[in-house]
Length: 576
Image (tube, rainbow, N blue to C red; front, side):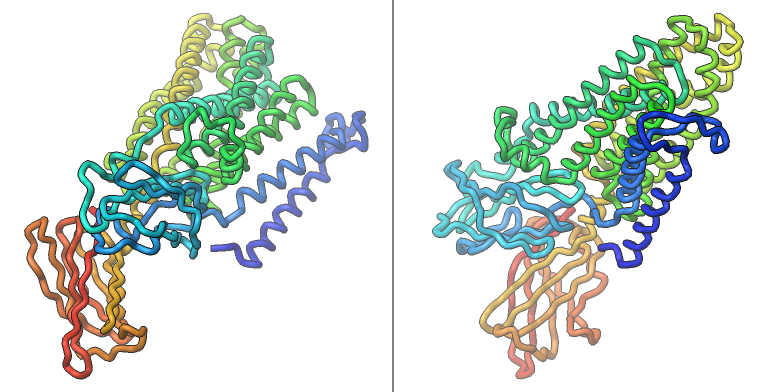
């Protein structure tokens, strides 16, 4: 749903409020600073820094309150259906998705292994009508599709159907292959980007706002940012490879990069580069300029992760985008503190205790929103508790939680038992704290590695939406036609609705309609259900039970106004 005019007015008000609020800060008109003790007791802020901070805050407000993005797309219906046997070559293929998509690759592979590109198609909302090649021979054909959903993630699949009779040894499984080099490279790039945004940008924020600035910590933080600067654009190219179904050797091709940048992740990567460059600059500054630049980098890092991805694309947008933003900022504040704190105590810096004291005050303001936002996003993404152990997404979440528990435990022990003694200079507490920080660093990077796997797992909320989609069938003869919809289109209790018309699309005043279903493969013979007409123009059968998934035979018996019996026959695919 697009935002209403009132929603746009609300966003305008937020942006105006942000700009107005920044006017109360002690800006100067040039790069020099002047003392303004009457305002805040600090030196004035350069006007150039004002523009940077205002731009970042406006970007954050516009992103967090945007509401147009939709969920992760998935194929919900294909015609011909996967596994279908048709008597004649189809003139068109129809692919219906759970949301509007952008097509990337459409190919048709024949039984002889040759494939042709399908470049004639019409998009109707979430449905692609693709023109089929003329003169398709009998045998098995595999429709290969790849599209990009509105959360920026490419998805793909295959649909196998046969004309006349199946070809031996040809199936969808033989065509659908995962390119592991591309997948591994995508995971590595995502991990490096996390290191740059969280450890690097977070480290710059820590150095400017908390302290603990040292040469070794700065080198490590800047190194993480440089790795992120390589990974951010590279990940866009890898996304283009994934979207096009290409291999690593195709990475230099312009079409690959155009494809990657055309997705919402292309915007996310550009914001990430801005965050990384700003964070790198913040390492070289001190005072109010360093504070402002590092704060801008932190806000941009949160915006980068909220601009695309599974979680940020979930509904309700006014909740999920700010939650992703807060979660990312909290991680950056926490992760960015670990290396400077560890280096400070390892080098026995005289100001290590003071830095620890200041961070212990700041930490709850990062960790509490981080945990609350993470819990909220998990609830939205899972949809049900059973998804934790029945989906790949849930398995990744359980692995992340298994790493988070000791991480939170270490943080609690540090704060409750070690912080005060370490501030007093007790050697034993300082030694324990150094070991604890090293363990936290290892756990944090392990969490980044696990979280990067989410790139390849659709959220359970999407799977649930797909399961709730109806199965549909259109049957058209010269005597009559019917549109049958079975909801949900999966095995179990369902209901059916039918729209009955004449063969010329005119009204058909039927006296009675009977739905006959059978699943010979499951040993279920024809079962008859008389339909009722509730008054909305449809014929309905409630309280159906389809105990097995697979291909069901359909027969619709129509008794016309002249008592003549018309029969329509077809097949419908019921999902597990």
